[in-house]
Amino acid sequence: MAEKPVMVMGLDESEHSFYALEWTLDNFFAKSGSDHPFKLVIVHARRTPASVIGVAGPGIPLQGSGDFITVLETDIKKEAIKTVVKATEVCKKKSVNEVTVEVNEGDPRNVICEAVDKHHASILVVGSHGYGAIKRAVLGSVSDYCTHHAHCTIMIVKKPKN
Image 1 (cartoon, rainbow, N blue to C red):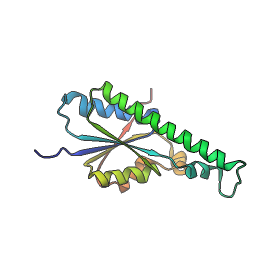
Image 2: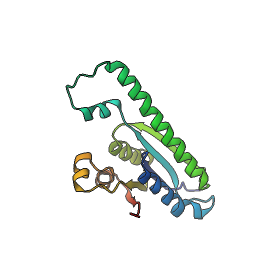
Image 3: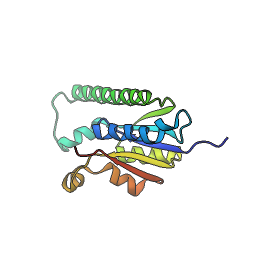
Image 4: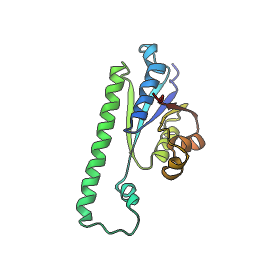
């Protein structure tokens, strides 16, 4: 029997991302019973302490920075665990039990595109935060980056504005 094509889903802790997950499960998985059309791989990019500290700016000394880094690392790990648990619960609620969930450290744009290549994904699904042009320019858009760099079909799921 031929292997199913792989769908990679990029997921962060935002409501936009979880909306995209639920939409994807409802439209691609829930209606097909146990014979799903894709093998689902959910990828969460865990931020590094350096990426969070980088927001404060380079060269800014932090008092007690060793303790601060330890607390920051712990918080980042807790956030990742919480996101993975919530994603797993959403999948189970939608009766999608065959799902792989990965947590990789790094910039979400790179982590997601690397996962697409690693799993030879046929399709990538990401949510959209709906940032305007200025926020997108300052913060960067994961979905925009992926549309230009992922080597597969991309589906961007937007949460309705209501």
